[in-house]
Length: 186
DNA sequence: TGCGAGATTACG
DNA sequence: GTAATCTCGCAA
Picture 1 (tube, rainbow, N blue to C red):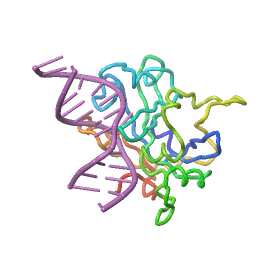
Picture 2: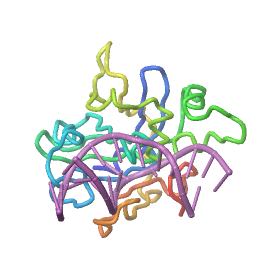
Picture 3: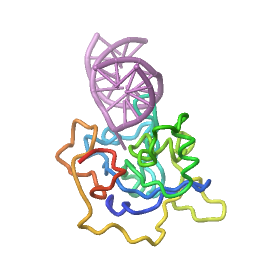
């Protein structure tokens, strides 16, 4: 499920867009690393809702992180977006990420879960928005298959999720191998 | 009611 | 290396 998101496009209403190159899967009651491990709270309630919505949370008191909810209603499961390859609206992303543009490289725009949210303009207001609303006045963000072939399986890498202390035995981080925009080094 | 840990990042 | 300072679980 989670690796299927690799290669998909996250599209903002203002034209900003990035291709997903790195994700991590999180489960519910059976995944000790998941926010949903101990049941629903005010923060994680969207994780228990229907699939295709955005779960946004505030991390370390500093920045926002975004997940795609993947489980049916009542089942907590989500995929954390860890890195995007910026493909459109780069000027808006640069303006959102950097006050001083000097000595910055576009490669770093969406490299990391917090940076990607900053670059795309994802924040508190977007917790729970529907990513699959294709209507004329659809939501502020959409998850799109633009027809670009997904990365071949041979180019996919897996490994332990980053920044957690429990559940490391599950290799639930998925990424496009050797992509320059990955949040962690090889 | 308070404290420690956490799906992190920017800047010296 | 460290500060930034939110949310939650658990102890008191």
